[in-house]
Length: 290
Image (tube, rainbow, N blue to C red; front, side, top):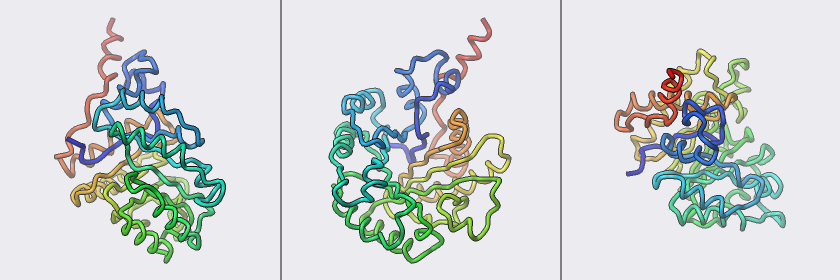
């Protein structure tokens, strides 16, 4: 049975997780397998440089359980260089990667991060691009330009577009305790902190949330996690299947903050169940006793 929501990190290759998430001394070849025992998704940036390694992707599929999903970001050559159009637009290598994941039932929504210069007047370009994509590949669109935030006209139009196509929006919630929340800051895509500063009603079946910038030493993190746990729980109640990624400054803190977040979602919805036991927990303590 598929999980009610998928929680993960933007990578799995973190040596600092040995002795906690991973077993002490676990070789890198085992990290993905151990990661996928706890989390049900990961954002793998292999596709960002536009190169494809189909054999590597097939190995990933063999190393993960049936209910695990990979999220691949669109290549920069497509988003930043080609701006979704023109002669530079070459999607074939990326679509090959998606096809392999789909064939192995490991494909999550691909994250289409629009560059900062992609503003409201370019919305027809996005519409044409999305309509030309194969319908079997799910997509979550992440906007960065202020035109798409604070209930701006372009933001409302993009919302309607995604809803019509049954595609999702990727929300970036960035915590920055050193920058006070102001009206100007709320209008900047990289300064979104709380749900009231962005439209959170889902446009598709798999809304995506990226919680960025949080650190364990920030005392306000629990409150911040609470409000976003409420949003995710509401999506689940509405029969959506959210994807949530914990993208923190100190990568080693990622699984711990993810666990904190999951506990809050579980408190709201006990049916999501407890997070599976980390492969490395307990073993590190046992080894220290001998």
